[in-house]
Length: 282
Image 1 (cartoon, rainbow, N blue to C red):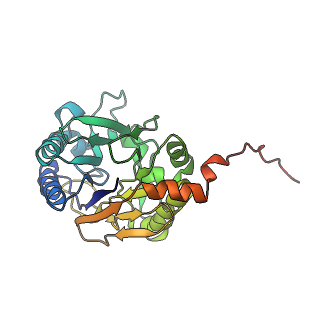
Image 2 (image 1 turned 45 degrees about the vertical axis):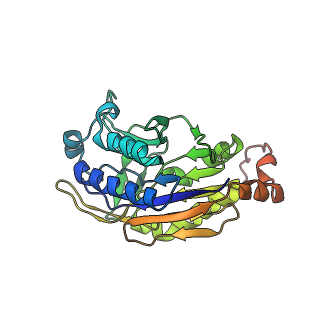
């Protein structure tokens, strides 16, 4: 059974209310375009580098207005919705947030949750440094979700660099890998497409990667730029959709039968072998 996926590319600010309004309109457009599944980027509700601002405007999951709006739209439009992630307050003893993805069914019920496992602690350049682990607590559980049209393997942004996660998801049954992101322009230009295509080829999965894009205005703290280029990739590695840098909704037709075909041709998921650790040489 084929299905239509709508990738929603956003330029979220640090104002959750404005971002929620944008989200509602995008979900309505996705439904009107005939989508079965709509996917949003990482931190759909708030792009902010200020911990003080985040604590002032964010909510725990049970009170989050963006999540509530997504559930309402999913039910009203009879649409599956993958909220790429929301930044959420938690009860973490160190005060760190959750970076959490949600799959919502057409009745508005939450069917799966995934907390980002790998934290983006990097120095991209002399002027661009990130320490995600200072503000967000990492998850420790891989997650599959099973809407009627395909089995999804959930991930978020920096997870993309860790191939073992996607291999584990594929070997557990994933046919479609979701990679909602807010990639840096520097790493995006160098690595985004090649990593998405590699994950698709390695696993024989479709990859759906909705992204944040553009200049993200900030009322407090450092403003951010993100790379955009929301992308859909087929199991053989072909790019089916590249949305460039403008916000909007992009549609792609997905045929899970292609997953079975590609894996039959190259059954690499069945060929794992244990190897001994390398020995030091003189």
